Image (cartoon, rainbow, N blue to C red; front, side, top):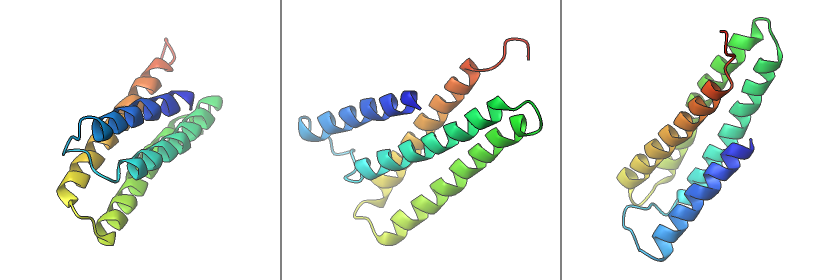
Length: 120
């Protein structure tokens, strides 16, 4: 869980610096909401992964699949609600959402690969 907090802090600092000092036009105004959402979903899915790693029965394989499905469903619901709410620049929000989704997903995969058993 600490890894996700550090990732979110690094991304948040990057967004903040880009927004405040460089006035980058490709930074969406909703970046704080996006980071908070992805941090909360990542903490939830990492908790499901750790519960699955504690067991050696069927939940070992089931809970990571549930976590990935939950991440996808929550992301779709969140994205749909944000677009339905009405945003001034939907394209920019969509691109930022997809980039952050892939960033957090890649980070989750890297952490999961690091925790794999060496003989499996």
